[in-house]
Length: 448
Ligand code: PLP
Image (tube, rainbow, N blue to C red; front, side, top):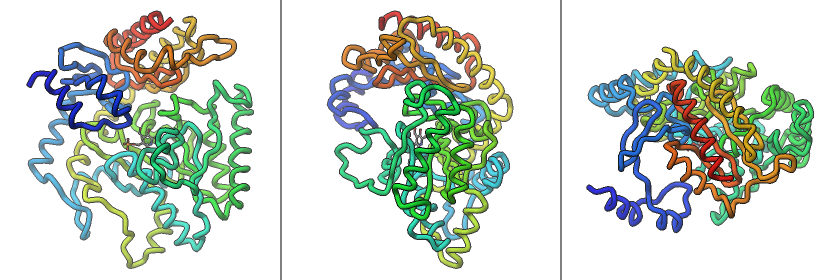
C-alpha cells in the first residue's frame, strides 16, 4: 500500500498517544518502516539515527537477531501461559530470578506488568494494601515531584505532574501531592548541590506536616533522573538523602526507573549509583528493549512479607491476563544477555562520549544548560544565557525543532520549552554518537 494512503487511513482511524488530535490530523503521520542498530528508515527510505531509542526504550537497538529468535521460539513452544491458578512459564520464572539477583538489596520479588504505567499503578495498589496490612489505613496520601512523570493510568496520572495529563480529564487527585523538583538549572535555592538537597528535604518534611504528619503519608515517588520533565538530573546524594528521610519517617520510597533502568544511565539500575535500596522500583522500557510490551515492579522482601502475611489465605486481588507473559519474558532474558554480554559496557563508553560531545555545544549562543548521565541527556536552549530566558515556544515550537532534526537525519525529543532530549540505543558506535552531536549543532544553527 502506498505511504500516502496509509497517512489517510491513520488520519481517519488511529488515535495517537499524547498528541493534539487536530494538530495530528493536519500534520499527518510519519511512518517508520525499518530499523537496524541505532538507525531507522522512514517509508520514503530516509535514514535517521534514532537519538531517542523510540521512546527511550530500544536500549539494545533495532533488529537484534537473538531477541527475534527468542521471541519466535517462545511463540512456537508456548505462546501464552497465565500466572493465575498457580500456573506459570519457565521464561517468566527465570527472568524474575535473574532480575531479583541483579536488583539492589532485598528487592527480591518481581511482579510483571505490561508497561510502566501499570507498574506504577500496581505500586499504588500494593502500597495501600501494605499499610492496611500493617494496621495503618490512614496512611493514604502520596507525594511525588513537580516535573515528574509516572505514566498515564487513571491513578498514576495523578502522580505525574505534567499539566496536560490532568486538564480536561476531571479525575480527582486530591490524595496525590507534589513538592518542587530539584531542577538544578532553575532551582530557586541556587545551583549548590547541598543547598538543593536541603531544600528538597525541607519541602518533603513540610508537605508531610501539611498532610497531617507521617501517619497520613503512604509513599514518596521519584525518578532517579526526571525524564519527561526535561531530563533533570538531581545532585549527587539527592536520591540517598530523600531515601533516608523516607525511612526515618516510615514512608515508602519508590524509585520510578521506567526510563533509567537497564543501562540507560550506565548500570542496570540507576539506584546502584547511589547505593540505595528503595522499598519498590518500577521498570519497563529497556526491560524488553521495546521489542514487546513488559514492565515490572520490584518489591523489597520487607514489603512483600507484610502483604503476604496480611492476605494470609486470601488472594491479593491484583492481576492481568498478560502478567508475566512468556514471550515478553523470553525477550527480557535475551535482552539481559545482550546487556551483560557487552552492551552495558558499550553504553557506558558511548554515554561518556555523548556527554562530552554535548558539553562541547556549550559554546553555542543558544545552549544554556547541558545535563545528563550515561545515554540519557538534554540540552536546554535559552535566548539569554545570563538571564536563562527560555526559548519562546511561539516562535520556536518543539515541532519545528523536531522537524529540523528529522531533516538532518536525527530523531530527538523536543520538549515545549526549548529542551532537546537524547536517549540513544546503547549499541551506538562512536561515529553515530559524533553524528548525533554534529547534527544537533546544525539544528541549533538553523534555530538561531
Ligand atoms: N514512569 C516513568 C518514569 C516514565 O518515563 C514512563 C513513560 O515514559 C512511565 C512511568 C509510563 O510508562 P509506559 O509509557 O510504559 O506506560
